[in-house]
Image 1 (cartoon, rainbow, N blue to C red):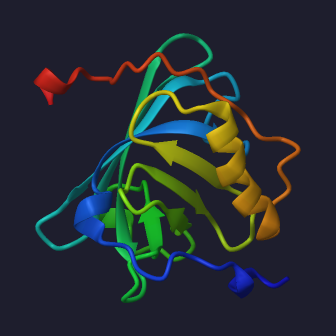
Image 2 (cartoon, helix red, strand yellow; image 1 turned 90 degrees about the vertical axis):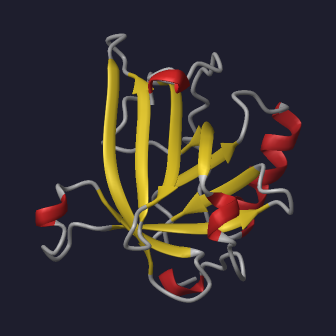
Amino acid sequence: MTNEDLLTAPHIELERYLGLWFEIARKPMRHEDADARDITAEYSLNEDGSVRVFNSCINAEGKLDQVEGTARAVDESNAKLEVSFLPQGLQWIPFTKGDYWIIKVDADYQTALVGDPQRKYLWLLHRQGNMRRDDALEWLEIARARGYDLSDVIWPLQSGAVYPPQELR
């Protein structure tokens, strides 16, 4: 299987994908503590058509970690995006963007499976902070069928909390 063989969703309605998502499961990544909890990603549209990415979590030390980035679709499907967490003025620098490929989203845009073509990163996202484990395992099985090794999947704790509270955003 080559990197380009990773099958993505045929088309993503970006407006429906925007909003708040809770991380249900993921593969390890160096930017996020293995013990991080209450992990959320919130997507909104910028004036230039790019997507504002706002990630929050409580890290292993119990402190709030937040980062803001920008994502841009790389083709008409809106399923393949590149994301950068560098300040806006530095996002032109080569090799500073990561692949964010939407592998699958359900018809109601309540659950999404996201990864990268190298199959190093994987996220199972859901609109609520909890998801039935059997349902989550079914979604992860899609990733396994597409070449992902799931032996190191992390299931972060989710209390349903959103940081900062919605009324302050």
